Image 1 (cartoon, helix red, strand yellow):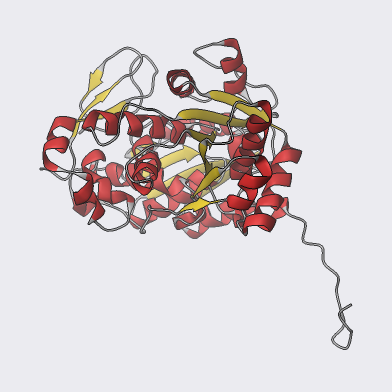
Image 2 (tube, helix red, strand yellow):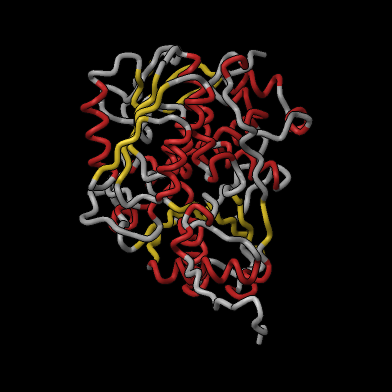
Length: 403
C-alpha cells in the first residue's frame, strides 16, 4: 500500500478532474477542488486496529492524506487533540452529553495548524518555493510556521484589526507580512495582484488550493476514532471560511465508504456571529450560495468572512445531514467564554465560545434534545485573544493585608 492513496482532484460543481501531481488551485469553473482517494485499496490494506498502533498525530491517517512521500511531511506533532467532557456546562444547558474537541492544544495554538501542515507538506512535495495568502490571523501564523519548517517563503496579508499575537507569530516565522486597513476579502485581492510577480509561489488562500481541507478533515477522523469508531448526534462548528466543516463532512463520507462507521450521520451546525452571518442568511432562505455580508464585524475575528468561497459546500453539508445554521451575539459569546472557564477550567477562543452560545440557544429552542450527544469544536486557545477577558484586579502594597 502506498503512503497515500491519492488518486484524483475533482470539481464538486462541474465534475471536471485534474492531475493531483501538478500544482493546482481552482477548477476552471471557479469552484474549489476536492481530493479523491482509492478507498477500495485503503479498505483492503488498512483497518482501525492498524491505525490505533500508529503515533498519535494526524499523519496516522496518511493513506487518506495527499502527501505521497513521507520525506516531505512537515510536522510539529499536530493532531490527536483531546475530546473533553463538559459535564457542568452540560447540566447548565440541559445537555447530558456535551463534549469539546479542543484544538487550542496544537502547534501555533489553533486548528489552522492541521490545514497548514498538510497543505504546506503537499506544496513542498510539488516543488512550491513560497506560499501566499490573506488571513484573519491564525491561518497566516500556522502557514508561516509550516512554510518555515519546509524552507519555503511566506507572503501574508492581514487585516489591521486581527489579533496582534498572530502578527508576532507570522513575523517570528519569517513571513513577509503586510497589514491592511480592510477585511480579509480585500487582503485576498492584494495577494492575487502580487502573485503575478512571484514565480514559484502558490496562492494558498482558503479553498483556493485543494489540500488545506484534507488537513482539516482529520478533526472528523480523530473525533470518530476517539468515540470508538462511531459518530455523535450533533457537531457544532464555528464557521468563517468553513473549511473545517467541509472537511469533517468529507471525512465522514470517506469513513462510511470504507465501512469503518455505519450509515448514521451527525447533524452538522454552522455557527456564525450576528455581525457576519452569510451562511445563516443563505440557509434560512434555502439557498445554495451565500451573498456577501455587508460591514462584517465580530469579536470572534475568525468568523469575519463576508463571502466564503466554499459556501456551496458548507450549505450542502448542512442540508445533507439535517443540520442547521445559527448566528449568536458577541455578548453571548463572551459570556459563554467566561462561563466555560469558570465551570470547566477551559479558556476557549471566541470562535469556540460561539459554539457554546449556539448550543445553549439550540437546547432552549428544542432543536437539541437533552439526550443528544453534542460535540462543540473549540478551534483555538483563548490565550490568542487576551483582550476578550478583562484583567482588572486590585493592586496591593507588599505590607498590605489581603481582605
